Length: 325
Image (cartoon, rainbow, N blue to C red; front, side, top):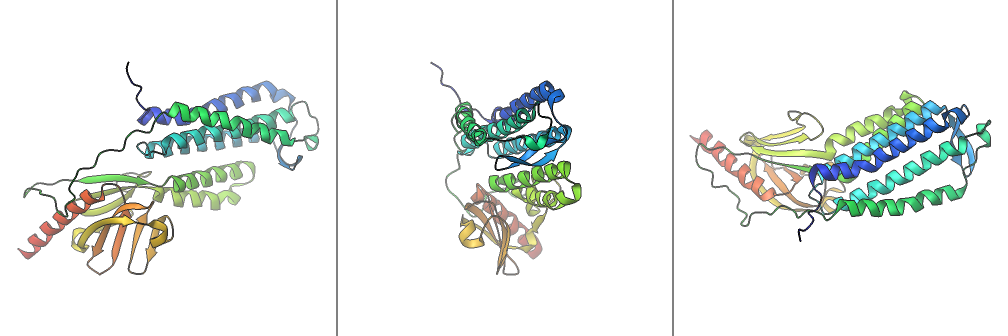
């Protein structure tokens, strides 16, 4: 009997995005069915069970679609960036549960407004919240089932050395991507909230949220590269040549690798600055530690740091030899 392989790559991304597509189609079909029976404006927000926020039907639908699209893209990005991570099945399960809660809430709000002449009279009973949460549990379980088992992590070569045995005149390159799912989620939520506020209120009020999302996302996923020019960091969500940090070989005194505790050493995730150095720490774990010629350190948490360090030291040795010659 053939064994079933765990879902990987593009298929996992499609699985993660699927529930939001289903909710978008369901919401669109429901809106088409009740559009002629809705008041103008709609009751769209409730304090307790009483309506305290209103908008036109078109604005409500546009806001709902914008939120669903943002969450859909965010879920796909998270799964794509962490495709080999063991937590991916649970990320997908969370996507399904989130889509279920959002979908139930949005659809029930439309149904509550149907055939009502005065939107202020619309009520949202507490049982609707319980229904949304109740639907989230089986939806999350379905997502976890469809996600399958997490793929095994790639094997690392044994024997970590500070230098690579690279023949003279030969060049090589090393590159890995490091991502922080919490920061990606934060950036997506900020952008989604900014879009929603801009659509339902005004774009000036949403500027802070949009700028916050635009500031967080570029640093939430970064491509770390070591080549004959040195060490460079490039945001994954921007074109390859958009680098926000480059350390040329003539600034490298020595490179090493060690385990880095992001909260204990740097107080959190992101681009951090402390006495004696700085770094990009998107998780705790192994990382590159570069001692600079000015005595400071630069660190970046990334998988396979030992290989990057060995290559960086090899190129640094070559650069010194050329200068000495």
